[in-house]
Image (cartoon, rainbow, N blue to C red):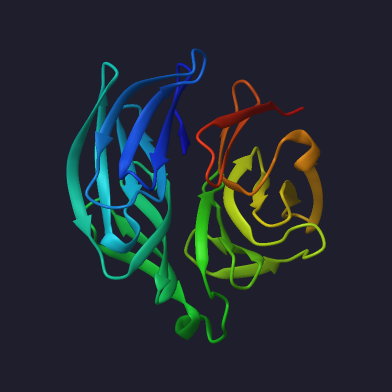
Length: 244
């Protein structure tokens, strides 16, 4: 799920292999496009271009957005099962891989610029790196790993800084996004949204089951309105919350 300007969202429909353009004010689907694999994660590159990770299809699919239309663009075939994707800038993508577990920085033409995996780190930092997000100042990349049950903090050059874990609050970290310099992450099995302060490792629950959060999967945040968008497993709707 990715937030666009003008009250629009891009949403991945994993089971139907479709990406939807949704007007979140009116709650209507404006456009849809079929993609050649299960769409897992999506990010905006520019106001008119997005990139979608196609999981087991081992590809990144570019989409073009124009006048409420979605069309397929170029496709990058990559080595490995892809999960999370986030724009580092208009020409580079941060991508997480499950097999073998790794995070790579790739160009918009598919060239691997840099990578970190267990071999290069000299320790098992990844088991199932699932989603990732880039900080607003592009200094850091945060990765949710549902295997280690940790949030991994990397530098922009993919050096390991630290790993955060709080199994009492956060069970199976999943979808992840930034709220200013703080990290918001889904607790898929703890049925909550947890806020992580990477400066001190402090975690707190901002939304939970009593707020309607149940098995959250993906997040998107609009910094202009302070609105957090949450999708859930096996539920055909998106919830909106105003964060303060």
